[in-house]
Image 1 (cartoon, rainbow, N blue to C red):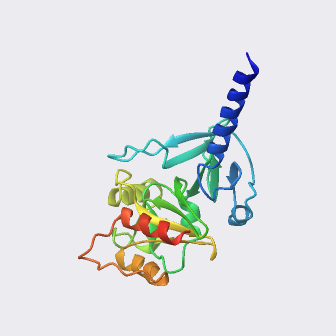
Image 2: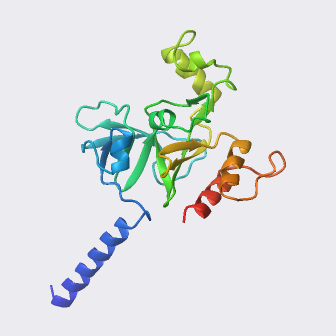
Image 3: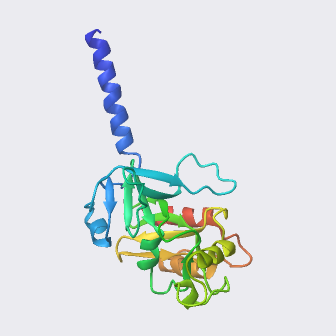
Length: 229
């Protein structure tokens, strides 16, 4: 191998490494499990281990990346539970459990469509917000009482999970927009159009005319991008 060829290969390798590291602007969370919110805020993994991933597939979903999944210990096959976030292969995932335990106090009556232990991919990074999309439901709208949705009385275990899945199945496309607010250190779930209008008002953006204007995830993504710089 000539010196020129070696130099070219080294330059290409460095370029590819740099490009991969810059894949997400603002991503600086070392690989590993972040057990608590404070670990995540400090960007200090609680634990690093080999993980296995089981993707949650949605109908009409053609994404080439894993956006919704379960994680398990690759050695013991034990599912990862009650972990705030996971940095895995250059991507960041929040758990449903973390979102619901650390949501804004105004985001009431919410339950996961699949499981508290499912994880969702962060798709937008910025100086103010980390954005993801989670399958969450309002348990009042689903015909479930607050006690039932918490597993207290009435339905429990598999029956409760089946009722939640029936009202908002995993095959529902994408779910609900959610941001992690870096300043307030809590999640804000955009439950509906009026709720999202509160977020727009906070950022001096013209509100959506709910009922007459289109309110969808594309609109939410566009707004989060615009305020995140």
